[in-house]
Length: 498
Image 1 (cartoon, helix red, strand yellow):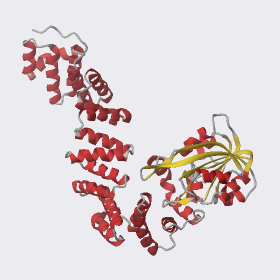
Image 2 (cartoon, one colour):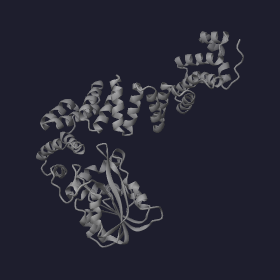
Image 3 (cartoon, rainbow, N blue to C red):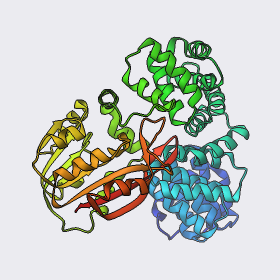
Image 4 (spheres, rainbow, N blue to C red):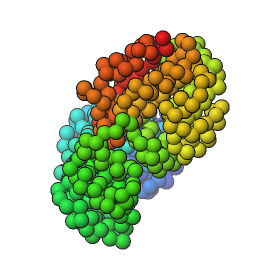
């Protein structure tokens, strides 16, 4: 006979002991043969787990773990049962304890990673997936799990490698092929993206979004390779009843081609679109950029049309997808706390992303933007004393009331010739006032109009232009955002009026 169990959970075990002996004769035999209690309890816990008696299994395995606290296998099995029972936090604690005793358990690392993903702890999940891959570089489960995590975190280059490895090892899950296609699309590998998305579409023939994404990838692939008409025919044959508005699809493809530097294909498609809508200000302006016809600044019609269409999804897209963080850099640019300004102008305010930072500086905040729909979104923030629809220079030159601080984030990028803008800003700054601005940088002897429709400037050239009216207070080279999955270099400037 065994001695009574005198550890935590003992009553929960001793009360149904006779029943368990009857239901699981092997358990009774282990006790009668004098097997170590942890071994017998482990057998019983696993048997209860197999029979989906999760609460009992957890109690029994917890007792086994209490009797054998240095046995990593029992701790890992207890963690797995707790996870199956929905007790995620407890499960993570037991699994982690098992790994502290025996870190060379690939499957336990994978369990920890999966739990951490569910619990929203992405940093620990990444470390756990990495540990599993270090132990078993051929683990398709680890590669797929980490790849899917990187998709969510927009680390597309790494995701493509990992998901590609998982697919090569035979992982046939639709999600893996769909996310592999998304990652490849984001890094501009449209041919392999369409191949991966084709596999995902075949796995789920009724999944409209997958089919549409596959058709879009194949459209862009074929636009790069040859005639527009053939590419559109292929798109229609793939998308079939899930086809979206063809003009909308082609305009989106045009923007993708511009962003990824596929200029010849973008020009071919742009010219087709212009034949259908010769007065389109957006396509026309980008075609000018692609073909080297650079105006002094972006036309008003372009800015109104572009940002009018963009307003509804602007914040989500630019912050969550493009990782635009420039407004949050304002406090550091302006120096440590304590600065206050009576009159602040947010020039080119857009939807008001900078408003939370500017409104904390004190005085009355005025916002100016050329696109009325952007102003509608800015108005929802309830942070501006006034919101005015106007082109930037036109507003600055239409009045004389001075501002103590003028901020122009993502405004200089729409001007090739910066002279008139700096002159106008200086005319509206109070003596000793500050001008904070950002611009995209490039090594170039003149302003560069990129296919994106934005100008890039050489910092040395910008310094020559502002030098007559401003002194440099601070400057910072930074990443403004991501474009085509690549960091976009820029500079923040803080200038003081002389």
